[in-house]
Image (cartoon, rainbow, N blue to C red; front, side):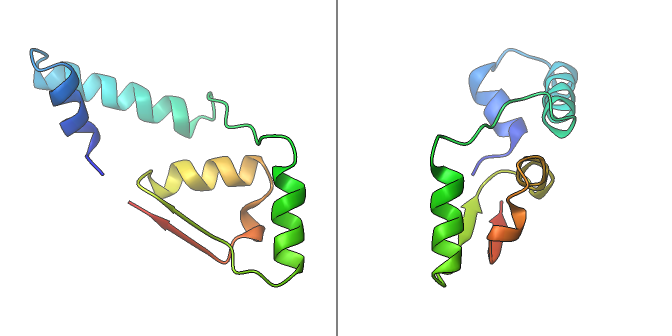
Length: 88
């Protein structure tokens, strides 16, 4: 995936480096503070639990930061369902 700085440069090419860094700091603080929603769709928890009980190897691969992923999984109390988590 692209870095936050690269994304900001693409979306807002006229922003200064300071403005980009301010946006990135606010974005990170927002997600790390858990001020976003990442609710599970109905039935997902049951499906994950059933798959785990049946011996399936469950993994997550994402370009998101480890801190963000851990925060979301811990808030949903589902981190223990996954055998492996790979972050960008």
